[in-house]
Length: 331
Ligand SMILES: NC(=O)c1ccc[n+]([C@@H]2O[C@H](COP(=O)([O-])OP(=O)(O)OC[C@H]3O[C@@H](n4cnc5c(N)ncnc54)[C@H](O)[C@@H]3O)[C@@H](O)[C@H]2O)c1
Image (cartoon, rainbow, N blue to C red; front, side, top):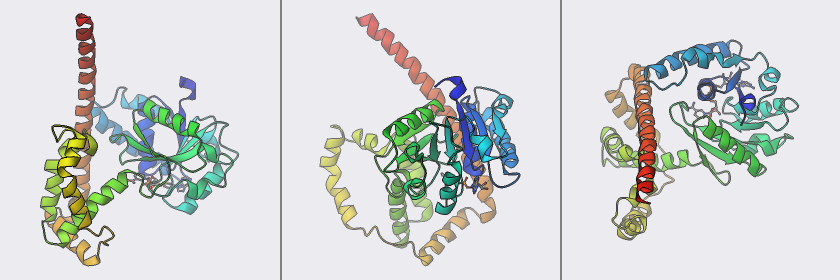
């Protein structure tokens, strides 16, 4: 993609839209921010400026914050925002009617060939793009909050999304440093929330049955499973947890997992009583007035982790080069 085509319109400048602006501008893209609410884009730019300072303090920016900020322009209208852009990242409210209207509004404004990714957390693109003439150029590109620290983006095509659209949005996401993952078709919750949902279901159940506390269940992830999961997925994890790899693991432990699954009714609802119990335990660990500070602490931890991953990635590249030169020494 040439430099002149690296322009994106972000429609909806709330939490996620502003975060997307960081992702694109940090990667050298020109960003146009648009929001229906008056004053919202200016508030977003203020917020972005603070986040860029934080990122700089963790050495996570290649360019100075002022240079990155200069790439972001607030557009007074949707027409001006999308004029000449290669890509639109729709980030309006998670409501079918609002998204549907936004896609209608793009009709006649979207440049020829421009693609539209929706940040939708759960509403499939088929629910709000069927009626537009450019529907083959639309799909869900679902980020995880905050996308400038957590790179995965789920690409979910509607039944009418062109294969070329998926491929091109995949390339755009790689270009801006994200890690796209592809789904072959729409499914509720996409991948990430389905995985999180299964784990959460068991967490609630273990509390409901009095097997363990909220604190200890969380520790099982933060001091256990999660340590590996920050750099490898569950399949790679089990591949390395049996001497013969994943098939060996399935042979050794498959029965245990089948038995656990058979013992559970995964349709169990999170009852009001149960939510109150979990809420009570959480508030004893972290009072409500500490939530904001703890969220800022989480973001700083994510920044430290991102810095470590970057250092590791460049270390791994150096290692690859050393391995290549070692290989050539052998030839
Ligand atoms: N918050 C998260 O953790 C998260 C994570 C991943 C995806 N998402 C998804 O991202 C999208 C945005 O979520 P958010 O958390 O940023 O919400 P938000 O409420 O912070 O921001 C939404 C913004 O859209 C604006 N808006 C509404 N209608 C508009 C229109 N027609 N044109 C332009 N702007 C319009 C609103 O004024 C608001 O500023 C949703 O689909 C949400 O599900 C959110």
